[in-house]
Length: 306
Image (cartoon, rainbow, N blue to C red; front, side):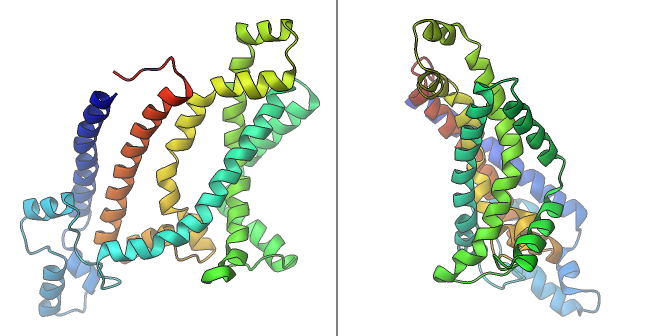
């Protein structure tokens, strides 16, 4: 296993560097002079030169890329602070929303999918499947606005938008969490239902039924254990995205998380923040894939890493 982990870790390096190189190249092509774009057309040449030096653009392209590859990103021009300090400050806000939504969503998706699959072809199964398909047709922004109007403005159950610190953040986080959970159910339930149905039709399930094993034990003990590989894959690969939040949601609810930071930085042409977030996302995603491979051996002893 250790040889496999070392080999996969080494393979992560060109993948992450390739993502960084692509991002760096796109920024270089799209914006030939980011300093001038950030300073504005009316800025003096002296101001532009100072900004160019501050962004590290007065150095060679190779030197710039080498700094980025070693996590030495230029200071954020919008916030006038080191990029990593801005990211570390915003990350807890995104995690405060994404982590509860993630665990609630996974629990509901698996539970409802098991219920639908165990009653395949019944009115309950058809109703759940129909609602899932219908939910996938609803644009996320439209759902956010509708829930803000209904639960926030109309019923006044939650604040419509905003954020606060400490314990008071709970009341502001509740509605965004609810939005994320509701919007994730459609695709998640359909995915898990399909996987569970494939297992239910296996020979070992029919054998268990012929021996008088209860439907509850078949689903929770046998079937659920054997569908853990696709569950792990679907779950672990979404973990890096939790850190960076939902771009549209954080902007719509005025949440000062990493999703909002990335959106603001794109509009403000703060390339340091955008490249840092892109680099970190690629790094975490590659690491999540490695973790999912390792977890395969834990949930299914038949899997071996070579």
